[in-house]
Amino acid sequence: MEIKLSDLWNVFKKVFLIMLIGGLVVGMFTYIFSNAFGKKAYSSSAQFFMDPNKDGIDVKDYTSYIVYCKENVKVLTKTELAMRNLLGYIDVMHAAEPENPDYILENVYSPGTLVGRCTITMAPGDYDASFTVTFTTPSSHDAMVLLKAYAATCNEQGSRVFGDNLAIKATVEGFRPGTQTSPHPFRNACIAFLLVALAVYFIAYLIAVLDTRLYNADDLKQHFGKYPILGQIPFVKEKEKTNEKEEEKAE
Amino acid sequence: MISINKNKIVQFFRRPFEKWNKRHTFTDKSTSYAEFLLDEKKYSVMDEAFRMTRTNLMYVGCAKKRAVCFGITSGRPNEGKSLTCANLAISFAMAGKHTLIIDCDMRNATQHRIFEKNVTRGLSEYLAGICEEPDVLKDVRPSLDVIPAGQTPPNPAELLYNGRLDNLIKQYKYEYDYIFIDLPPISLVSDATIVSALLDGYVFVVQSGVSERKTLEDSLAQVEAVKGNIVGFILNAVMEQDGKGYGKYGRYGYGIPASEKPEERK
Image (cartoon, rainbow over all chains, first blue to last red; front, side, top):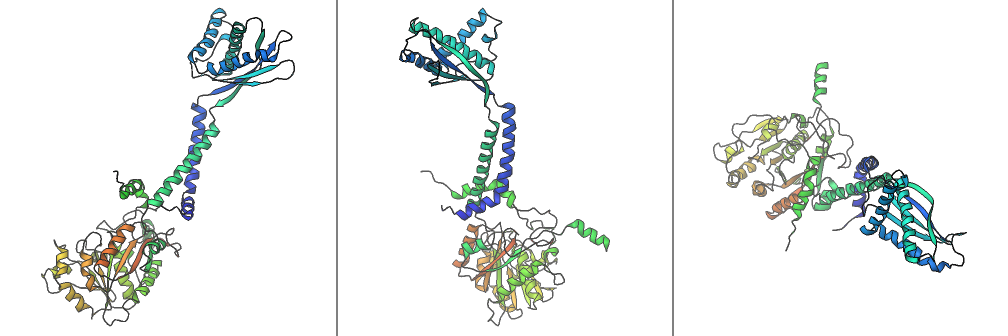
């Protein structure tokens, strides 16, 4: 089947308004719906600084520790065991200190619901290495609790693996609470607008292509050019009966 | 192997949008046609449209001394054949031509309803041999006579074969300038092709936005198969956005019954 640019343009001209209005209406609904019912999530992050306590320790010596911490974040949010370790630590600490808000989570988490990310950067100044951990949670407070718990578990693990020889500590600094990562009402509205506009156009084009009815002299000439068009009789609206009656009354 | 029926796909996609393209037809038998007939006292764009059509048709068979006989038909029913036929004949009559309409659509007789006349003996009675001559409705308009279809017979196609219509048309060809035969739709029944030998040409009424390309192709092929002469098309009920050359048409309508509220096609 041949697709002509003129056909595409003609269909576009015909359905442009429907595309625009349909897209705007659906986009608006999507915006409202996303805002009202979309599951909110905040991305909170903190920098973990690796601070060698002893002089003369080479950065290379604790690179493996940084790599361990980094990998742990990846594993943490994907495996049930690592997740259970982190949440288990918070539970234990909460049991010990029930009033401490650092060990109270506002939401219930299970493997898969928590999203974490870790990036490693070399920090200038006193600190030799640092990495950033980001947790995406329904509340900023939970992110803070998780970040602190994570730092604690990292340090526990670190001292268990490397012993006292490598006395480095992960410390949480520069905590940035809650930038909303989802839902994205405006982005969703834009996507809805585009999808609806495209769908309307596609359906209209399909109808136009599949429509084999004859509408005007051009259609007749195109398909039955062998025979002449003797005349074109216009379609006009019927006489309005109410007006007719009024005219009769006036007479 | 899976075979794809294109027509079924077309129907599937089209069905939800049928209402958009709905055009009104005179299916209601009680509808009055008077409002939609040409009137020499009133000028309308329809007058001009039929005048142009008349001018084009006058070139066909202009060298003949006898009456020129046109068969007005269409691919499928309810495309406005009968009303177009009547208005075309009125247009010729208004030009001073002695014109006759023969309602050959015995299955759906319309001409007597258009001109609001009662019929006792129509074409079907004549063809069946019940009477020697059909009733001719004289001067339904100045210079315009009508032979109505009469009662619906059980076998219209067979009646058209019996040769009596040939005699009738031969007789009237010397009395009239133009004869318009209102024929049934070609795609449904064979009546319209049976009379091909009697006609100088077929005029196809094509209703804008309703007539199917395939149906028209098939109908034209049927006429060509019986060596019928196709004079051309009359494009009927052309809407403002479909047609070219028409401005606002005014409030008076064509192709819609007065009893129904008009619907705009999208």
